[in-house]
View: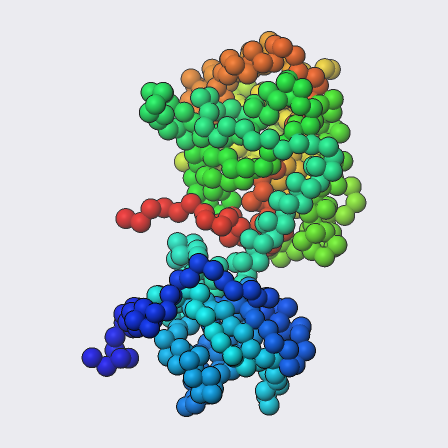
Length: 486
């Protein structure tokens, strides 16, 4: 069979066999000393360098050969001739995708290309599969997500997005630590999911013969820590919500939550401004104005502050303070031909929440603090003392509906909190399966006393979407959730 008609994977396996016969370990454990390609490129001609990388091109011409070696976003050309017989013959057993350690002398070719004249080369890892033809221009994004390792290997933009994500997380962590917070890890498996209005994933804990849930929020455990005397705590980690997939939703996502004793939601607005502006600067070269999906976003100065009820009135002409029952609000919604496709909404809190999400949020482009939510939509927040039906809460919304931050003054009255949980349980019985459950252990903790506290949460993935100008949340998650193949 002609060599070119054989599958390349077979040819590469044959080369692996030949390497073994020659006593060459194709997967050695130790990498000899070296510098990066970027560092090598900064050395003067004539310097001897050793570096590592992945072969991205092999061009053999008779008694000489040129190769390209790439590491991260840097590349350097390699040159070898028959004078270095052992290294030259090794090239016949190499393929694009192999990882090498090389050493040699720097020189510049007649074409002006900085090049390493190889003295020796060591194979570090043999590539047994070639990059699929046309992968570099692949438009089928689902295939990219399913072959994420290959995507990152060949897609510089995909790598940069994840690098930005890492920078965002480290900036948030540094910001909070500068403000005196400590980072604590709380349970991912929980006997009762709480801290957010969402449907959880349920799993069976065989050893205990009990159902457990993947957490939907870190909130109730972090507030237990505040009860225990930790006055500034935060956590960055995964949460899970059993909801549909969309360009804005992934069932597993990364949250940052912090809780700060003796503060209110008003106090956290300024802190939020400072943190978000720092995130924008660190990812946009100290600039506070940039574009997201061709929309201009200006994060400079003080963010706008608008009330929840006022925004609904402005966009729909519905006054939710008057349409204060499910029947009244439902009639108002129907009168304006507003529909919620595929949803069977049965309680006022869910209806007003969906109304806001559909009719108001998409119109908010500039960063805006939306304040004063109905207390029934915020079962863990304090109401105002002079207006107990309104929650001391804000959300930071921007870029056509992105909820970037959710924060409120935490309810620390255990009797009120227990009654709120019971009201939520009633909503569950009426058909709202995202309503919260009664957590008696948390109520008991509150009874020992929790100081006035403000809590704050940010969805890392959505923040990174805006900062990297990505339409889909899948682009900013290293390994997004995908529908199983049939």
